Length: 408
Image (cartoon, rainbow, N blue to C red; front, top):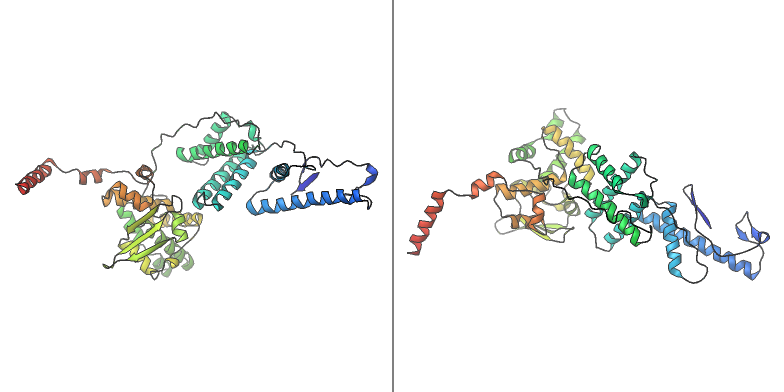
């Protein structure tokens, strides 16, 4: 049985049906005659054909990229699991690394549908797969069998990400881990017989976490900047001004809520107003399932009121479109920071930890983190925090004497 898909052709193996050349209709690809035997064999071939068509439909629905190798693997494994007579004999296919990554991502999509993987993590893994594919095409290794990978390959890919993509050490490390996970899965699912990277060890990065954030001064400039006035003065197209104004509002709102993009976009949070007319934001992180809550400060409240205190009315774009717009905003304001949705989250963390002197445990709670260990990726204590917390000896001595007098 041979199958062609998008000009790619491959043999799926033997159907174990024997016949004489005189019994076979080459033009119609069927057995000749109306005998019971011929009808049974034609019925069997039709069953194979329908199963393959159904398998292709399922794969196209679940994958962005479908190859003949992926179809063959999925169909032959299903046939083998059926058991009994009439199964197709599978021939070992040489899978490329791209195909292994695609199949790995397909399994991750299924885990997401089962609630075992967050949408944000799935999106991150999709980016890893795309970046790895870009490298393989750039290096003309897109036909490279997955079984031929070695440490030199991993080093070359890491070097590409460093010199061409300008990725940080931690980000590169995550791409290498993705390749290892994909090969481990391929071995477990018997796409490949042996994992060539089973003994490969990824060196832990000693790079300091990137805690880039906006200062209070930069944040104030962002809050007060009037894009619509630029449109009225003819310096900016009205549609562009409106887009920049809305994204600035979304960014500012997240600078005072610390929400991850996926949590903000899904609107799986609510606003409570207490008896003192203070606004509280309450929700749950999609990724960690951890609850978070915080008091919304005035700039965040102002954004909320601008959109009629309706969460649904708050501006929403995809993460990529938001980041593209934020680059323009940084350029218009002359900010030295490369703005992104994550910068808003880090700005909130720095404000809470270093300006408001909120304890690390509480900052982690407001961010919806599982532990304070993860907080180091968002903010770290700065000198001004320690200067305000570390009292002078005179102050400590004065407090001691006051306490002694009160006790007496």
